[in-house]
Length: 290
View 1 (tube, rainbow, N blue to C red):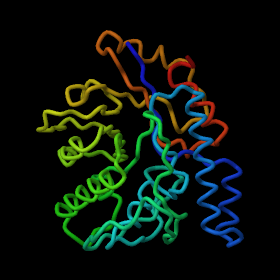
View 2: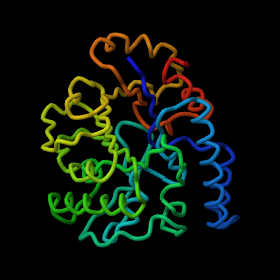
View 3: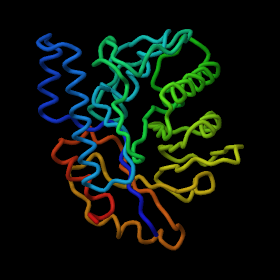
């Protein structure tokens, strides 16, 4: 069985970037300067992923203060509400307040936005390993306070995601659903528009999709459940919430080798819960340190 490594989500900032953010928040350096610093730090991260021989990785999202804020702030009709706890963690996000959604603003060039470092939304690496990242539509809605119809909003968000894919010419995209969900047919049009990876949370036994074309991968806690809906099953296995470095991933997936020719191994959650030094070491553990 061939193991394919994949890292997704917000990556912890270096001490140098943390200090730069402190200066920016105090007005000691400009938004242009912090944007340049983010670009530099992203390049360092991409060099590290290549050293670790990762097969796929998302943008490190160094200028994302939480999983949904830059997306929310780029859509007219969405404002930020109170700080809200993210799952059962010590991490918080600003709850989006969603009214009637309007157009998608500029996301691919420098632009200052409220309560978040400046855009562009992504600082792309031009390798074929790079994946754009977007929060799951279902989870986006669950994490928000709605002033509009949820079903209508789901369709509008899908259209906005399709616009993002077209505007940025996304060849590969990873969507992360941090909350349990079963409505994945919303992504059928996106499957036609880009090579789509999906990370799901919990059990989704009612997963259905009417499309003949499949996700590239559905990454979950149980690859058997989603195998028929993707080209390559994926397993969330590299623990993002402990500082222990796994050295036995090959052993852990050994029992799956009789059932799958290929398997994507990925992290269980964003690495931003970890100290940067630990996160850097974990990059080398995805395939047992091979």
